[in-house]
Image (cartoon, rainbow, N blue to C red):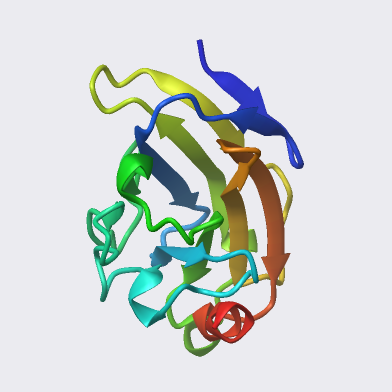
Length: 181
């Protein structure tokens, strides 16, 4: 049975291989192009290298531990809109955290924000049987934010854990690049 997390909630990840599914719907008839990205960070909270920033233009980390399955431009339909496969048994030994962010593509140009998005969630599930292990639904109204850190996976005392973060910012992917590089 899946664990439903609230903001700040944490859970231990017992499987080394899992999929991060992210989903959302647009409030109106206009299309909102959201992009999921992952930053694989060291103890210093910085990306191990540029190649450890996984997104629609770099679909796989060099260690093969994190793989983005591709960009969904519309968010149409039910279920996951974008997915990221993770295999912690392959992760670089210097990795201490995996930060999961979602940004709105060309938000400023299109005058879009997360207030135009509903039913946003991040979930982690077992790819072998599709069993959902945990889920975090963003219930806040991010009416001015154009980027949200959905969650993070971090290593503590040899165990990998997930934390539901749910922190938005007015800025885009470039702001996260500046923060983590």
